[in-house]
Length: 524
Image (tube, rainbow, N blue to C red; front, top):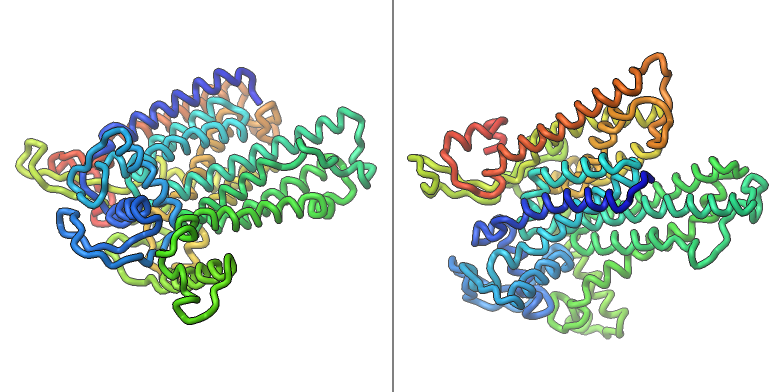
Protein backbone atom coordinates (compact mmCIF):
# COMPACT_ATOMS: atom_id res chain seq x y z
CA UNK A 1 0.00 0.00 0.00
CA UNK A 2 1.22 3.56 -0.62
CA UNK A 3 2.55 5.39 2.41
CA UNK A 4 0.69 8.17 4.24
CA UNK A 5 -2.52 6.45 5.17
CA UNK A 6 -3.81 9.45 7.14
CA UNK A 7 -3.37 11.60 4.03
CA UNK A 8 -5.39 9.10 2.04
CA UNK A 9 -8.19 9.45 4.58
CA UNK A 10 -8.10 13.23 4.15
CA UNK A 11 -8.49 12.76 0.40
CA UNK A 12 -11.26 10.19 0.86
CA UNK A 13 -13.16 12.45 3.25
CA UNK A 14 -12.82 15.31 0.78
CA UNK A 15 -14.51 13.15 -1.87
CA UNK A 16 -17.16 12.08 0.64
CA UNK A 17 -17.82 15.72 1.55
CA UNK A 18 -18.53 16.50 -2.12
CA UNK A 19 -20.90 13.55 -2.34
CA UNK A 20 -22.66 14.51 0.90
CA UNK A 21 -23.15 18.17 -0.01
CA UNK A 22 -24.60 17.22 -3.39
CA UNK A 23 -26.97 14.66 -1.90
CA UNK A 24 -28.24 16.50 1.16
CA UNK A 25 -28.81 19.94 -0.37
CA UNK A 26 -32.51 20.26 -1.31
CA UNK A 27 -33.09 16.66 -0.22
CA UNK A 28 -36.69 17.48 0.68
CA UNK A 29 -37.64 18.60 -2.84
CA UNK A 30 -40.09 17.72 -4.16
CA UNK A 31 -42.06 17.52 -0.90
CA UNK A 32 -44.41 14.89 -2.32
CA UNK A 33 -43.96 11.19 -3.04
CA UNK A 34 -42.34 10.53 -6.41
CA UNK A 35 -42.26 7.38 -8.51
CA UNK A 36 -42.11 4.21 -6.34
CA UNK A 37 -41.80 6.21 -3.13
CA UNK A 38 -45.56 5.87 -3.05
CA UNK A 39 -44.96 2.20 -2.17
CA UNK A 40 -41.72 2.09 -0.22
CA UNK A 41 -42.01 5.24 1.89
CA UNK A 42 -45.55 4.31 2.91
CA UNK A 43 -44.55 0.73 3.62
CA UNK A 44 -41.72 2.06 5.78
CA UNK A 45 -44.26 3.96 7.85
CA UNK A 46 -46.43 0.84 8.04
CA UNK A 47 -43.47 -1.12 9.41
CA UNK A 48 -43.03 1.49 12.12
CA UNK A 49 -46.73 1.29 12.99
CA UNK A 50 -47.35 -2.47 12.73
CA UNK A 51 -44.01 -4.28 12.37
CA UNK A 52 -45.17 -5.56 8.95
CA UNK A 53 -46.50 -3.99 5.76
CA UNK A 54 -50.12 -2.97 6.00
CA UNK A 55 -52.63 -2.31 3.27
CA UNK A 56 -54.44 1.02 3.29
CA UNK A 57 -56.36 2.99 0.72
CA UNK A 58 -55.36 6.64 0.36
CA UNK A 59 -57.00 9.73 -1.08
CA UNK A 60 -55.18 12.28 -3.23
CA UNK A 61 -53.92 14.13 -0.15
CA UNK A 62 -52.35 10.98 1.29
CA UNK A 63 -55.00 10.49 3.96
CA UNK A 64 -55.99 6.93 4.86
CA UNK A 65 -59.52 6.11 3.72
CA UNK A 66 -59.67 2.33 4.28
CA UNK A 67 -57.82 -0.33 6.31
CA UNK A 68 -57.49 -3.78 4.72
CA UNK A 69 -55.07 -5.36 7.19
CA UNK A 70 -51.69 -7.00 6.46
CA UNK A 71 -50.39 -6.48 2.96
CA UNK A 72 -48.88 -8.85 0.41
CA UNK A 73 -45.66 -7.24 -0.90
CA UNK A 74 -43.06 -8.59 -3.32
CA UNK A 75 -39.77 -7.35 -1.84
CA UNK A 76 -38.17 -8.30 1.50
CA UNK A 77 -38.48 -5.74 4.30
CA UNK A 78 -34.91 -4.59 5.07
CA UNK A 79 -34.80 -1.69 2.60
CA UNK A 80 -38.11 -0.41 3.92
CA UNK A 81 -36.88 -0.77 7.51
CA UNK A 82 -33.89 1.40 6.59
CA UNK A 83 -36.20 4.04 5.12
CA UNK A 84 -38.27 3.75 8.31
CA UNK A 85 -35.19 4.56 10.40
CA UNK A 86 -34.92 7.86 8.54
CA UNK A 87 -38.58 8.64 9.22
CA UNK A 88 -38.12 7.77 12.89
CA UNK A 89 -34.98 9.91 13.21
CA UNK A 90 -36.67 12.84 11.51
CA UNK A 91 -39.58 12.63 13.93
CA UNK A 92 -37.18 12.26 16.86
CA UNK A 93 -35.62 15.61 15.98
CA UNK A 94 -38.97 17.35 15.57
CA UNK A 95 -39.56 16.99 11.83
CA UNK A 96 -43.19 17.56 10.86
CA UNK A 97 -45.06 15.93 7.98
CA UNK A 98 -45.90 18.22 5.10
CA UNK A 99 -48.15 17.02 2.28
CA UNK A 100 -48.35 13.27 2.95
CA UNK A 101 -50.61 12.73 5.93
CA UNK A 102 -49.98 8.97 6.01
CA UNK A 103 -46.26 9.43 6.79
CA UNK A 104 -45.14 10.95 10.08
CA UNK A 105 -42.24 12.96 8.64
CA UNK A 106 -41.48 15.22 5.71
CA UNK A 107 -39.69 14.14 2.53
CA UNK A 108 -36.31 14.67 4.22
CA UNK A 109 -37.25 11.90 6.65
CA UNK A 110 -38.10 9.22 4.11
CA UNK A 111 -35.11 10.15 1.89
CA UNK A 112 -32.58 10.47 4.71
CA UNK A 113 -31.24 6.89 4.75
CA UNK A 114 -30.92 6.54 0.95
CA UNK A 115 -28.75 9.68 1.04
CA UNK A 116 -26.69 8.32 3.94
CA UNK A 117 -26.12 4.98 2.24
CA UNK A 118 -25.30 6.73 -1.03
CA UNK A 119 -22.59 8.78 0.68
CA UNK A 120 -21.22 5.74 2.53
CA UNK A 121 -21.01 3.81 -0.74
CA UNK A 122 -18.81 6.58 -2.19
CA UNK A 123 -16.50 6.22 0.82
CA UNK A 124 -16.33 2.42 0.47
CA UNK A 125 -15.60 2.63 -3.26
CA UNK A 126 -12.86 5.22 -2.68
CA UNK A 127 -11.09 3.06 -0.11
CA UNK A 128 -11.61 -0.17 -2.08
CA UNK A 129 -10.20 1.36 -5.26
CA UNK A 130 -7.17 2.61 -3.32
CA UNK A 131 -6.58 -0.86 -1.93
CA UNK A 132 -6.97 -2.54 -5.32
CA UNK A 133 -4.87 -0.08 -7.32
CA UNK A 134 -2.40 0.88 -4.57
CA UNK A 135 -3.03 4.52 -5.40
CA UNK A 136 -4.72 7.23 -3.34
CA UNK A 137 -5.30 9.31 -6.47
CA UNK A 138 -7.02 6.49 -8.35
CA UNK A 139 -9.12 5.74 -5.27
CA UNK A 140 -10.22 9.36 -5.11
CA UNK A 141 -10.93 9.36 -8.86
CA UNK A 142 -13.18 6.31 -8.53
CA UNK A 143 -15.08 7.82 -5.59
CA UNK A 144 -15.44 11.16 -7.33
CA UNK A 145 -16.74 9.54 -10.52
CA UNK A 146 -19.49 7.75 -8.60
CA UNK A 147 -20.26 10.87 -6.56
CA UNK A 148 -20.83 12.71 -9.86
CA UNK A 149 -22.92 10.03 -11.52
CA UNK A 150 -26.50 11.00 -12.19
CA UNK A 151 -28.12 7.63 -11.54
CA UNK A 152 -26.32 7.11 -8.24
CA UNK A 153 -27.11 10.72 -7.32
CA UNK A 154 -30.83 10.50 -8.04
CA UNK A 155 -31.27 7.13 -6.34
CA UNK A 156 -29.40 8.48 -3.30
CA UNK A 157 -32.13 11.12 -3.04
CA UNK A 158 -35.13 8.87 -3.64
CA UNK A 159 -36.77 6.48 -1.17
CA UNK A 160 -36.64 3.31 -3.25
CA UNK A 161 -34.65 0.13 -2.62
CA UNK A 162 -31.88 -0.09 -5.18
CA UNK A 163 -29.33 2.14 -3.42
CA UNK A 164 -29.37 -0.29 -0.48
CA UNK A 165 -28.82 -3.34 -2.70
CA UNK A 166 -25.85 -1.61 -4.31
CA UNK A 167 -24.43 -0.64 -0.91
CA UNK A 168 -24.50 -4.17 0.52
CA UNK A 169 -23.03 -5.72 -2.65
CA UNK A 170 -20.23 -3.14 -2.73
CA UNK A 171 -19.53 -3.56 0.99
CA UNK A 172 -19.33 -7.35 0.54
CA UNK A 173 -16.87 -6.94 -2.33
CA UNK A 174 -14.77 -4.54 -0.23
CA UNK A 175 -14.63 -7.17 2.52
CA UNK A 176 -13.38 -9.77 0.05
CA UNK A 177 -10.64 -7.47 -1.24
CA UNK A 178 -9.50 -6.87 2.35
CA UNK A 179 -9.67 -10.61 3.00
CA UNK A 180 -7.47 -11.24 -0.03
CA UNK A 181 -4.81 -8.87 1.30
CA UNK A 182 -5.01 -10.35 4.79
CA UNK A 183 -4.58 -13.92 3.57
CA UNK A 184 -1.46 -12.91 1.68
CA UNK A 185 -0.13 -11.06 4.71
CA UNK A 186 -0.59 -14.21 6.81
CA UNK A 187 1.32 -16.28 4.27
CA UNK A 188 4.11 -13.70 4.13
CA UNK A 189 4.56 -13.93 7.89
CA UNK A 190 4.65 -17.71 7.65
CA UNK A 191 7.36 -17.53 4.98
CA UNK A 192 9.35 -15.15 7.17
CA UNK A 193 9.05 -17.71 9.97
CA UNK A 194 10.61 -20.40 7.81
CA UNK A 195 7.57 -22.24 6.44
CA UNK A 196 8.13 -23.84 3.02
CA UNK A 197 4.77 -24.34 1.23
CA UNK A 198 6.48 -26.06 -1.71
CA UNK A 199 7.22 -29.07 0.50
CA UNK A 200 3.49 -29.90 0.63
CA UNK A 201 1.60 -31.43 3.54
CA UNK A 202 0.96 -29.28 6.58
CA UNK A 203 3.54 -26.76 5.41
CA UNK A 204 1.20 -25.86 2.54
CA UNK A 205 -1.58 -24.89 4.93
CA UNK A 206 -2.04 -21.92 7.19
CA UNK A 207 -2.31 -22.88 10.88
CA UNK A 208 -5.82 -22.37 12.23
CA UNK A 209 -5.73 -19.58 14.79
CA UNK A 210 -8.05 -16.77 15.82
CA UNK A 211 -6.20 -14.38 13.50
CA UNK A 212 -6.20 -16.69 10.46
CA UNK A 213 -9.98 -17.17 10.50
CA UNK A 214 -11.20 -15.21 7.43
CA UNK A 215 -13.46 -12.83 9.34
CA UNK A 216 -13.75 -10.40 6.44
CA UNK A 217 -14.88 -13.22 4.18
CA UNK A 218 -17.56 -14.24 6.66
CA UNK A 219 -18.65 -10.62 6.96
CA UNK A 220 -19.12 -10.58 3.18
CA UNK A 221 -21.57 -13.47 3.50
CA UNK A 222 -23.60 -11.57 6.09
CA UNK A 223 -23.62 -8.45 3.90
CA UNK A 224 -24.80 -10.43 0.87
CA UNK A 225 -27.60 -11.88 3.00
CA UNK A 226 -28.62 -8.36 3.99
CA UNK A 227 -28.53 -7.36 0.33
CA UNK A 228 -30.93 -10.22 -0.45
CA UNK A 229 -33.07 -8.87 2.39
CA UNK A 230 -33.54 -5.72 0.32
CA UNK A 231 -34.00 -7.33 -3.09
CA UNK A 232 -33.49 -10.90 -4.20
CA UNK A 233 -31.27 -9.78 -7.08
CA UNK A 234 -28.31 -9.57 -4.67
CA UNK A 235 -28.22 -13.39 -4.81
CA UNK A 236 -26.55 -13.15 -8.25
CA UNK A 237 -23.35 -12.02 -6.57
CA UNK A 238 -23.08 -14.94 -4.13
CA UNK A 239 -21.75 -17.64 -6.52
CA UNK A 240 -19.61 -15.08 -8.36
CA UNK A 241 -17.90 -13.89 -5.19
CA UNK A 242 -17.44 -17.48 -3.99
CA UNK A 243 -15.73 -18.36 -7.28
CA UNK A 244 -13.49 -15.30 -6.98
CA UNK A 245 -12.30 -16.39 -3.54
CA UNK A 246 -11.41 -19.84 -4.85
CA UNK A 247 -9.50 -18.43 -7.82
CA UNK A 248 -7.59 -16.01 -5.61
CA UNK A 249 -6.65 -18.74 -3.14
CA UNK A 250 -5.57 -21.17 -5.86
CA UNK A 251 -3.42 -18.53 -7.55
CA UNK A 252 -1.88 -17.63 -4.19
CA UNK A 253 -0.85 -21.24 -3.66
CA UNK A 254 0.52 -21.46 -7.16
CA UNK A 255 2.62 -18.36 -6.47
CA UNK A 256 3.89 -19.96 -3.26
CA UNK A 257 4.94 -23.09 -5.15
CA UNK A 258 2.41 -25.44 -3.55
CA UNK A 259 2.49 -28.76 -5.50
CA UNK A 260 -1.30 -28.96 -5.97
CA UNK A 261 -2.63 -25.39 -5.72
CA UNK A 262 -6.15 -26.00 -7.08
CA UNK A 263 -6.73 -29.11 -4.99
CA UNK A 264 -5.28 -27.57 -1.83
CA UNK A 265 -7.26 -24.37 -2.28
CA UNK A 266 -10.44 -26.44 -2.47
CA UNK A 267 -9.52 -28.52 0.57
CA UNK A 268 -8.28 -25.60 2.67
CA UNK A 269 -10.76 -22.92 1.69
CA UNK A 270 -13.81 -24.87 0.58
CA UNK A 271 -15.25 -25.02 4.10
CA UNK A 272 -14.76 -21.29 4.62
CA UNK A 273 -16.32 -20.51 1.25
CA UNK A 274 -19.32 -22.72 2.06
CA UNK A 275 -19.59 -21.06 5.47
CA UNK A 276 -19.61 -17.64 3.86
CA UNK A 277 -22.32 -18.78 1.46
CA UNK A 278 -24.33 -20.40 4.26
CA UNK A 279 -24.26 -17.17 6.30
CA UNK A 280 -26.37 -15.57 3.58
CA UNK A 281 -29.38 -17.57 4.81
CA UNK A 282 -29.52 -16.55 8.52
CA UNK A 283 -28.64 -12.97 7.60
CA UNK A 284 -31.52 -12.95 5.13
CA UNK A 285 -33.95 -14.51 7.61
CA UNK A 286 -32.95 -11.91 10.20
CA UNK A 287 -34.34 -9.20 7.91
CA UNK A 288 -37.78 -10.81 8.39
CA UNK A 289 -37.67 -10.36 12.18
CA UNK A 290 -40.70 -8.08 12.16
CA UNK A 291 -42.71 -10.71 10.29
CA UNK A 292 -41.62 -13.49 12.68
CA UNK A 293 -42.24 -11.38 15.80
CA UNK A 294 -45.84 -10.51 14.95
CA UNK A 295 -48.93 -12.57 14.25
CA UNK A 296 -50.31 -10.20 11.64
CA UNK A 297 -47.95 -10.53 8.68
CA UNK A 298 -49.14 -11.84 5.33
CA UNK A 299 -49.38 -15.67 5.56
CA UNK A 300 -47.80 -15.51 9.02
CA UNK A 301 -50.05 -18.41 10.14
CA UNK A 302 -50.70 -19.99 6.76
CA UNK A 303 -50.59 -23.59 8.07
CA UNK A 304 -52.98 -22.85 10.93
CA UNK A 305 -55.36 -21.06 8.56
CA UNK A 306 -55.40 -24.21 6.41
CA UNK A 307 -56.26 -26.34 9.44
CA UNK A 308 -52.80 -27.92 9.80
CA UNK A 309 -50.55 -28.19 12.82
CA UNK A 310 -48.10 -25.29 12.99
CA UNK A 311 -44.95 -26.37 14.80
CA UNK A 312 -42.78 -23.73 16.50
CA UNK A 313 -40.01 -22.36 14.28
CA UNK A 314 -40.50 -24.97 11.52
CA UNK A 315 -44.09 -23.88 11.05
CA UNK A 316 -43.07 -20.23 10.75
CA UNK A 317 -40.37 -21.13 8.24
CA UNK A 318 -42.84 -23.14 6.17
CA UNK A 319 -45.26 -20.21 6.20
CA UNK A 320 -42.49 -17.89 5.03
CA UNK A 321 -41.65 -20.36 2.27
CA UNK A 322 -45.27 -20.29 1.13
CA UNK A 323 -45.12 -16.50 1.09
CA UNK A 324 -41.94 -16.64 -0.98
CA UNK A 325 -43.55 -19.01 -3.44
CA UNK A 326 -46.21 -16.39 -4.13
CA UNK A 327 -43.56 -13.69 -4.54
CA UNK A 328 -41.56 -15.83 -6.96
CA UNK A 329 -44.68 -16.38 -9.04
CA UNK A 330 -45.27 -12.64 -9.17
CA UNK A 331 -41.76 -11.87 -10.37
CA UNK A 332 -41.73 -14.57 -13.06
CA UNK A 333 -45.05 -13.30 -14.43
CA UNK A 334 -44.21 -9.59 -14.34
CA UNK A 335 -44.56 -8.87 -18.05
CA UNK A 336 -46.94 -5.90 -18.18
CA UNK A 337 -45.62 -3.07 -20.32
CA UNK A 338 -44.50 0.26 -18.88
CA UNK A 339 -43.47 3.44 -20.74
CA UNK A 340 -40.10 3.54 -18.96
CA UNK A 341 -39.18 -0.14 -19.15
CA UNK A 342 -35.94 -1.09 -20.85
CA UNK A 343 -33.90 -4.16 -21.76
CA UNK A 344 -30.45 -4.85 -20.29
CA UNK A 345 -28.73 -4.18 -23.61
CA UNK A 346 -29.97 -0.57 -23.36
CA UNK A 347 -28.60 0.15 -19.89
CA UNK A 348 -24.94 0.87 -20.64
CA UNK A 349 -25.86 3.10 -23.59
CA UNK A 350 -28.56 5.00 -21.67
CA UNK A 351 -31.21 3.75 -24.06
CA UNK A 352 -34.19 4.40 -21.78
CA UNK A 353 -33.92 6.41 -18.53
CA UNK A 354 -36.78 6.77 -16.05
CA UNK A 355 -38.65 10.00 -15.34
CA UNK A 356 -39.57 10.00 -11.66
CA UNK A 357 -40.91 13.55 -11.36
CA UNK A 358 -42.42 16.03 -13.83
CA UNK A 359 -43.94 19.48 -13.40
CA UNK A 360 -44.70 22.27 -15.88
CA UNK A 361 -45.62 25.03 -13.41
CA UNK A 362 -44.09 28.31 -14.68
CA UNK A 363 -41.55 28.82 -11.89
CA UNK A 364 -38.57 29.55 -14.15
CA UNK A 365 -39.66 33.00 -15.36
CA UNK A 366 -40.06 31.88 -18.98
CA UNK A 367 -43.30 31.42 -20.89
CA UNK A 368 -42.89 27.63 -20.93
CA UNK A 369 -41.07 25.75 -18.16
CA UNK A 370 -40.17 22.17 -17.33
CA UNK A 371 -39.15 20.64 -14.02
CA UNK A 372 -38.07 17.01 -14.16
CA UNK A 373 -36.14 14.48 -12.12
CA UNK A 374 -34.73 12.09 -14.68
CA UNK A 375 -33.04 8.89 -13.58
CA UNK A 376 -30.17 9.14 -16.04
CA UNK A 377 -26.51 8.34 -15.56
CA UNK A 378 -24.03 11.10 -16.33
CA UNK A 379 -23.67 10.55 -20.11
CA UNK A 380 -19.90 11.12 -20.38
CA UNK A 381 -19.31 8.53 -17.66
CA UNK A 382 -21.81 5.91 -18.78
CA UNK A 383 -20.78 6.08 -22.42
CA UNK A 384 -17.23 5.38 -21.26
CA UNK A 385 -18.18 2.13 -19.53
CA UNK A 386 -18.22 -0.15 -22.58
CA UNK A 387 -14.87 1.11 -23.96
CA UNK A 388 -13.42 0.82 -20.45
CA UNK A 389 -14.59 -2.80 -20.13
CA UNK A 390 -12.99 -3.66 -23.48
CA UNK A 391 -9.72 -1.90 -22.58
CA UNK A 392 -9.70 -3.45 -19.12
CA UNK A 393 -10.12 -6.91 -20.61
CA UNK A 394 -7.18 -6.32 -22.94
CA UNK A 395 -4.96 -5.03 -20.16
CA UNK A 396 -5.99 -7.85 -17.86
CA UNK A 397 -5.19 -10.58 -20.38
CA UNK A 398 -1.97 -9.05 -21.69
CA UNK A 399 -0.64 -8.26 -18.21
CA UNK A 400 -2.06 -11.27 -16.36
CA UNK A 401 -3.61 -8.99 -13.76
CA UNK A 402 -6.14 -10.26 -11.20
CA UNK A 403 -8.07 -7.00 -10.91
CA UNK A 404 -9.87 -6.96 -14.28
CA UNK A 405 -11.27 -10.43 -13.57
CA UNK A 406 -12.63 -9.32 -10.18
CA UNK A 407 -14.07 -6.09 -11.57
CA UNK A 408 -15.52 -7.77 -14.66
CA UNK A 409 -17.07 -10.55 -12.58
CA UNK A 410 -18.87 -8.00 -10.39
CA UNK A 411 -20.14 -6.08 -13.41
CA UNK A 412 -21.30 -9.30 -15.08
CA UNK A 413 -23.15 -10.45 -11.93
CA UNK A 414 -25.00 -7.14 -11.87
CA UNK A 415 -26.12 -7.15 -15.51
CA UNK A 416 -25.88 -10.49 -17.31
CA UNK A 417 -28.56 -12.38 -15.30
CA UNK A 418 -31.11 -9.84 -16.46
CA UNK A 419 -30.53 -10.87 -20.06
CA UNK A 420 -31.88 -14.31 -19.13
CA UNK A 421 -35.04 -12.82 -17.64
CA UNK A 422 -35.43 -10.57 -20.66
CA UNK A 423 -35.14 -13.48 -23.12
CA UNK A 424 -36.79 -16.30 -21.15
CA UNK A 425 -39.53 -14.47 -19.24
CA UNK A 426 -39.88 -11.19 -21.19
CA UNK A 427 -39.88 -9.58 -17.79
CA UNK A 428 -40.59 -5.89 -17.30
CA UNK A 429 -37.27 -4.29 -16.27
CA UNK A 430 -35.91 -0.82 -15.67
CA UNK A 431 -32.61 0.96 -16.08
CA UNK A 432 -32.03 1.34 -12.35
CA UNK A 433 -31.67 -2.45 -12.05
CA UNK A 434 -28.10 -1.84 -13.23
CA UNK A 435 -27.16 0.16 -10.12
CA UNK A 436 -25.49 -2.78 -8.23
CA UNK A 437 -23.13 -3.14 -11.21
CA UNK A 438 -22.17 0.53 -11.25
CA UNK A 439 -19.34 0.42 -8.67
CA UNK A 440 -17.62 -2.25 -10.77
CA UNK A 441 -18.11 -0.23 -13.94
CA UNK A 442 -16.55 2.79 -12.23
CA UNK A 443 -13.66 0.61 -11.06
CA UNK A 444 -13.15 -0.46 -14.69
CA UNK A 445 -12.81 3.18 -15.73
CA UNK A 446 -10.43 3.91 -12.83
CA UNK A 447 -8.33 0.88 -13.74
CA UNK A 448 -7.94 2.03 -17.34
CA UNK A 449 -7.04 5.55 -16.18
CA UNK A 450 -4.39 3.96 -13.97
CA UNK A 451 -3.00 2.01 -16.90
CA UNK A 452 -2.74 5.20 -18.93
CA UNK A 453 -0.89 6.94 -16.12
CA UNK A 454 1.43 4.18 -14.93
CA UNK A 455 2.23 2.57 -18.25
CA UNK A 456 4.24 -0.65 -18.63
CA UNK A 457 6.46 -2.38 -16.13
CA UNK A 458 5.65 -4.09 -12.88
CA UNK A 459 6.41 -1.28 -10.45
CA UNK A 460 4.81 -0.96 -7.07
CA UNK A 461 1.40 -0.41 -8.68
CA UNK A 462 1.64 -3.85 -10.27
CA UNK A 463 0.16 -3.21 -13.71
CA UNK A 464 2.15 -6.03 -15.31
CA UNK A 465 4.63 -6.17 -18.20
CA UNK A 466 4.57 -5.14 -21.85
CA UNK A 467 7.53 -4.93 -24.21
CA UNK A 468 9.54 -1.75 -23.46
CA UNK A 469 9.99 -1.10 -27.18
CA UNK A 470 6.27 -0.38 -27.45
CA UNK A 471 6.17 2.02 -24.52
CA UNK A 472 6.67 5.74 -24.18
CA UNK A 473 9.32 6.96 -21.72
CA UNK A 474 7.90 6.72 -18.23
CA UNK A 475 7.91 10.48 -17.57
CA UNK A 476 6.04 11.18 -20.80
CA UNK A 477 3.61 8.35 -20.14
CA UNK A 478 2.86 9.70 -16.68
CA UNK A 479 2.41 13.25 -18.01
CA UNK A 480 0.13 12.34 -20.92
CA UNK A 481 -1.79 9.78 -18.90
CA UNK A 482 -2.37 12.23 -16.05
CA UNK A 483 -3.61 14.86 -18.50
CA UNK A 484 -5.98 12.37 -20.13
CA UNK A 485 -7.30 11.07 -16.79
CA UNK A 486 -7.77 14.56 -15.35
CA UNK A 487 -9.50 15.71 -18.51
CA UNK A 488 -11.92 12.82 -18.34
CA UNK A 489 -12.83 13.45 -14.68
CA UNK A 490 -13.30 17.17 -15.43
CA UNK A 491 -15.57 16.33 -18.39
CA UNK A 492 -17.67 14.08 -16.14
CA UNK A 493 -17.96 16.92 -13.60
CA UNK A 494 -18.98 19.40 -16.31
CA UNK A 495 -21.53 16.96 -17.71
CA UNK A 496 -22.97 16.39 -14.23
CA UNK A 497 -23.24 20.16 -13.73
CA UNK A 498 -25.06 20.55 -17.07
CA UNK A 499 -27.57 17.85 -16.17
CA UNK A 500 -27.88 18.83 -12.51
CA UNK A 501 -31.19 20.76 -13.05
CA UNK A 502 -32.91 17.61 -14.31
CA UNK A 503 -31.45 15.52 -11.48
CA UNK A 504 -32.99 17.70 -8.76
CA UNK A 505 -36.20 18.92 -10.43
CA UNK A 506 -35.23 22.56 -11.01
CA UNK A 507 -37.70 24.51 -13.11
CA UNK A 508 -35.92 25.64 -16.29
CA UNK A 509 -37.11 26.98 -19.66
CA UNK A 510 -38.56 24.22 -21.77
CA UNK A 511 -36.05 24.73 -24.58
CA UNK A 512 -33.16 24.36 -22.10
CA UNK A 513 -34.68 21.13 -20.86
CA UNK A 514 -35.16 19.80 -24.40
CA UNK A 515 -31.54 20.51 -25.35
CA UNK A 516 -30.47 18.03 -22.68
CA UNK A 517 -32.52 15.24 -24.30
CA UNK A 518 -29.64 14.08 -26.50
CA UNK A 519 -31.40 10.88 -27.62
CA UNK A 520 -34.71 12.62 -28.28
CA UNK A 521 -37.81 10.57 -27.54
CA UNK A 522 -35.75 7.79 -25.92
CA UNK A 523 -35.08 10.21 -23.06
CA UNK A 524 -38.56 11.76 -23.02
